[in-house]
Length: 137
Ligand SMILES: [Zn+2]
Image 1: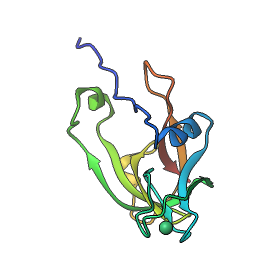
Image 2: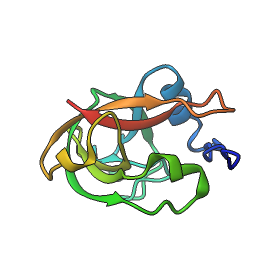
Image 3: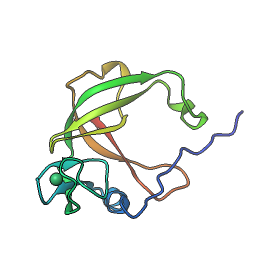
Image 4: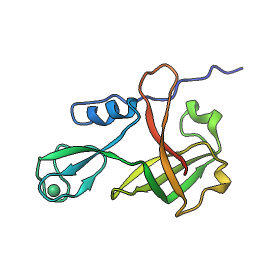
């Protein structure tokens, strides 16, 4: 039997650290611009709308809908081979930004565009870092 490889785990940096720390607390954090009010995700050092650097971390409620998705039948990495078929999706969170993730805890054949989902937090072998994903709401 082949040895199971561990899935990749995030390496937080100075900009993304609050996001990853939030995930470990069960919070999905995103940035909102203090100048123009626009929500943005993923974490950056400046607002993508107005270039201001007054970015404030906020906690998302965790609800959203599937904007698009693909069912993966051939894993890109050996560590995901045991998960196929699995769903890679673009999710529009209710706070106004898009998030790429896996849709967990469901039959991939039941996933639909517009389907309501909620954020959940995946544990990965060999790491204390939780990874935000979604599951059916
Ligand atoms: Zn802005």
